[in-house]
Length: 225
Image (cartoon, rainbow, N blue to C red; front, side, top):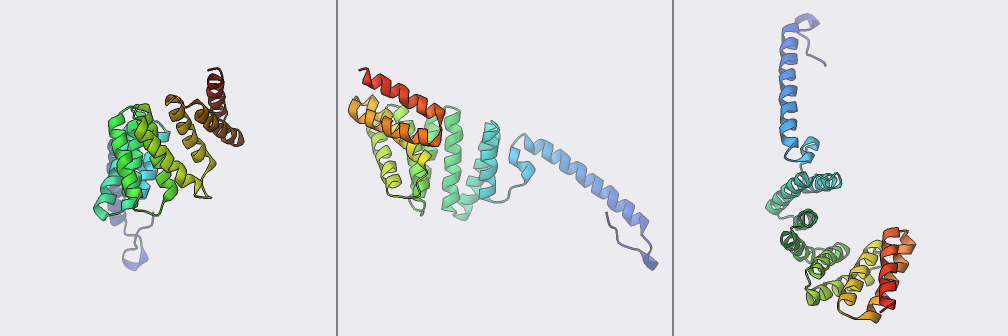
């Protein structure tokens, strides 16, 4: 630590001791602050300041299986972005909250957050993000047995993906998978088999063994009917 020189260029030791003492107190207060706040939000240790930083911290907490911390981070992002009129990060915060609520089986809350995110993404130039979120809505609706609404959402997501050359193959595969499940639940065997075959080809290309196994299982079941 550097301290200012006193008269005649000599170190002014009393000030130095005072400064060191004050700094020690400050460090102790900061340590106490971080210990308390980290129980509320994991990202507080990183001191995020923008909605994007809060969102990144929320996803980090989710990956580390800290759902309460992740939820708090996404809420901070939502508060900041809503106040500033930042629609894009408001949508991203709702999407993050939707994932956390779905992880916790709070399906009603998850669907509400995803739907709010979709409404906001429609006002942005972010078609792939919109399609990705619409697919999540479709998955929830399918799980809840709302087949008609799920179908509309899957078809909209696929329309966006098929029209965009930058569509990630995994996102397309996951959407085809959901649409295949919809067709299967709707009793449309031939359509379901075609979708499972398309999904299987993509998962094989990506090397996703769990996806390949699921597709193979569904195809075997449908061919045995």
